Image (cartoon, rainbow over all chains, first blue to last red; front, side, top):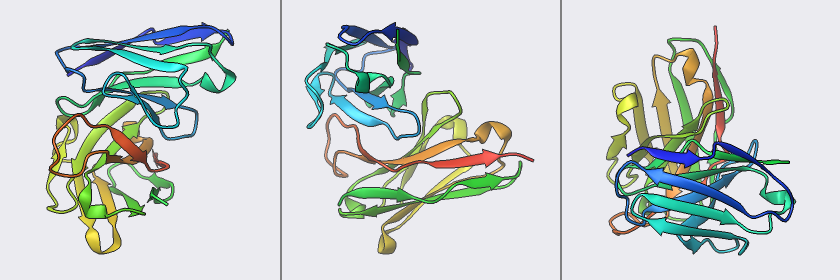
Amino acid sequence: IQMTQSPSSLSASIGDRVTITCRASQNVNKYLNWYQQKPGRAPKLLIYAASTLQSGVSSRFSGSGSGTEFTLIISNLQSEDFATYYCQQTYNTWTFGLGTKVEVK
Amino acid sequence: QVRLEQSGPEVMKPGASMRVSCKASGYTFTDYHIYWVRQTPGQGLEWMGRINPTSGGTNSAQKFDGRVTMTGDAAISTAYLELNSLKSDDTAVYYCARDFLRIGVPGITWFDLWGQGTLVTVAS
């Protein structure tokens, strides 16, 4: 299963609302997770099962979708949110999207 | 404290074999699958395979078939990734990660615990 994220990068300002899309090449139901990665660090789980916020993760992050179309929204973007975001499907093996880098405008 | 601790960076020659270790602590090693994921410079995350530390059973991505070996030593709660016939484009950070679900439990899963990553550089 191929995972396609868009955009591959975006520029945003503090306080912005950011939307990242992930599309699966076939139905993955809700077997879709989102990770945040900062340079030199391992990925950190943000959202699992498409829409459930991982414990300890800011409520600025939200996820939605099912089947083949998924969205990660970051509301009220903060400085610590500048990072790269990856979607991952675990419906059939465990593949990741190529990532979306959120940069400072 | 629940954690995965990986071995240190390596510099390898083309054609050689690498081995990365991943030591689990704070939980029962044999209860959860361990996955291996790599990240090449400037690129995204690539799933390589997984091991069931209880049975030793493995699944690997087709891309790495024949080149990758994953093993585990339950006595010391450590998983190993071996990759042979190294090429320059195997230069990457290699991560181990733990499955959220216990082995045998069905359902939606994710990687809830990651090692710190091991940089392997392949250069002549």
